Amino acid sequence: MAEKTVDFEKSLERLEAIVEEMEGGELSLEQMIKHFEEGSKLVTLCSTKLNEVEQKIEKLVKKGGTLSAEAFDQEK
Image (tube, rainbow, N blue to C red; front, side, top):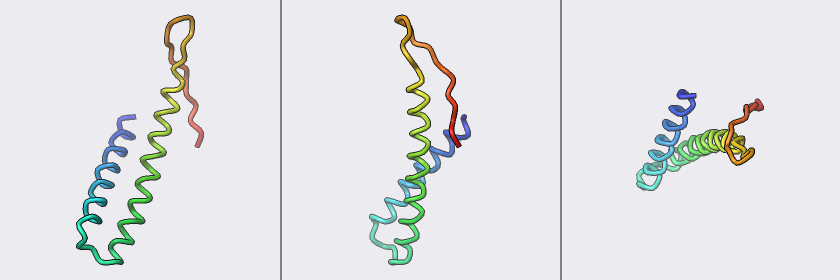
């Protein structure tokens, strides 16, 4: 799971760098398009990771006044 966190963190950092570069106004149109495409892929990756985490959190259910974790089956 730590590897997924690293992937998410690195993806988010790269996405932030892309946004900064695009907002800088010094990229050519072709570079902007490439950055946009890369950014779109990173947004999808980060969104997928966040959805996985959200589903795991939702598996925490209240039973008899206490919280317990249930196994989470990932669909791939």
